Image 1 (cartoon, helix red, strand yellow):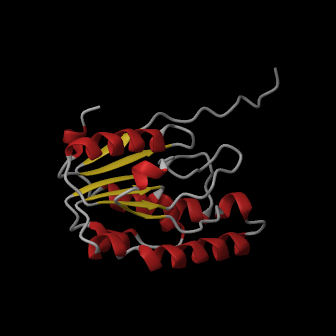
Image 2: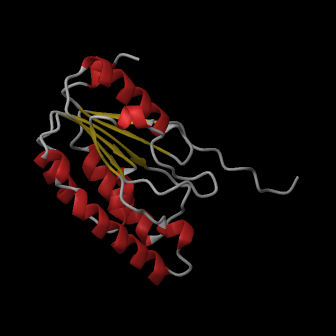
Length: 187
């Protein structure tokens, strides 16, 4: 992989659940670490994996060395919430935890920032607020969910709208193939 094509650009990797967004992000991270001067930052906003959905970037301890690596506790609202009220509460709690770390990369002077699962912030946070915190960083690589797997809830519509705001501000948007739902029709 040629990481240089990501340098000094704002790249957003989007797609369905289990489409390979974190894997692509990890390959770009590894490539840029070889050629690009730091400092590097990683905001890992993904929850722990639940039923094959989500998951933190699998960085080794060596890869985390010298990197401003921030990974708050994130609870997946749609997978854990048992009611619309609980989903909204969990989304709000996630946003509060993310807000506490959002200024750190820019304040620390990172030149390259990776954000894993940025769409989790958009369940209750605003893309404009996130953008204000990251737009001055020379190289941005973000990934997030942008699909139909989770249906058409109010949270999903909000997340989609905020992702579109972010898409409009990035130099490149890479779309990963759609996740194929198992055929549930009778045989």
